[in-house]
Amino acid sequence: MDHVIAIDGPAGSGKSTVARAVADQLGWSFLDTGAMYRAITALALRTNVDVHDHDAMAALASGVVIETVPATVIDGIDVSDEIRSAPVNDAVSVVASQPLVRAAMVRRQQEWAKRQPRGTVVEGRDITTVVFPNAVVKVYLTASLEERSRRRVDEDVTSVSRRDQIDSNRPSSPLRQADDALYIDTTGRAIASVVEEIVTCLNQRS
Ligand code: DC
Image 1: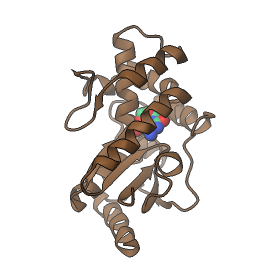
Image 2 (image 1 turned 45 degrees about the horizontal axis):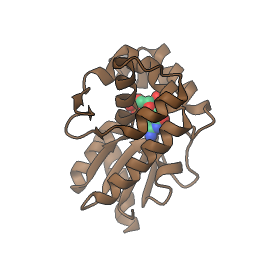
Image 3 (image 1 turned 90 degrees about the vertical axis):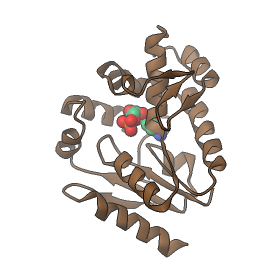
Image 4 (image 1 turned 180 degrees about the vertical axis):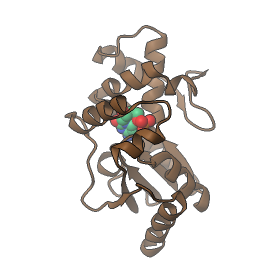
């Protein structure tokens, strides 16, 4: 648990790219928790489970096996492409707002981190506030809405801002900046410089 770098932020803030690069530089594992919520959503859509039915979604979330590396695979089905589709973009915030689905995912994320031989870099919306509040480095990444939409080639500005609204205003673990998180606005910044800022922060603390 000591060896966790936790990164939160809205869609398109650069979390996945930065988290992956930090993990590569340190030789640590990387976990994209958004891909887990997306995988559950993709499976529900495939199997005609109503994404608004909290009990059905909770049952689905507690029983499945999800892998995110090297591909996103749920119950043996590779959904790596499907999780970036418009139907999943539209439904994932509804799924991620459900407390029982979140509890099942959070438990998996914490167990997964414990199993990693070195450290782990984890990114999502509640990682610094709920999942790993004691992470050695906590980061809140953001960027302007225009830049975030530009980075999301698969999603338009309306869809990104709609997801921002839902993720930030839901009662269960809304996206918010942890008090002690490093705030980084990535607008117009090179990935390498953001990565360096995070690694420097880690080195100062260890
Ligand atoms: O980071 P992303 O766009 O792939 O995330 C997909 C959705 O899942 C997004 O609407 C927010 C939600 N999510 C969440 O609620 N908690 C996380 N730890 C990760 C993602």
